[in-house]
Image (tube, rainbow, N blue to C red; front, side):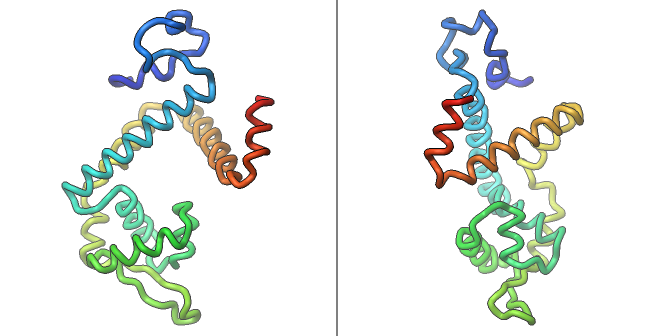
Length: 181
């Protein structure tokens, strides 16, 4: 495992890690150690997204939108929001910006004029076929290094976490679950 994140996966019962060494390698308990890895991923996504924006003109999120629209031409904005797990109002601004930049074509649905249908423009199609997906490349490299069983287990844990985070409105329930874990 590369560089500085390898120490984040040491077992919690690793005696060599307890109370010794720099703060970033000291165990914090199961939940906080897991969060530390998630924050490292979040930081990596943000940093790589900024790099993609400066080098290729699209962020990681915009690249993902391009790839999904390429996969599902004519997808509605609402369905795209569901695929990306974004609030439709958040997605609307991003889609309008990408439309203004000539990456997407936004057209009202012929059957329901309130709905938008999304297509890639020629410029958007070019970006979908270019090797600009630095985030995608990192994910692909990572997935190639783990067994199918580990990948399945990881997806299950992350999906469960996503479900529990979706319940953020019920903070009392989350607090009760955390204290009983």
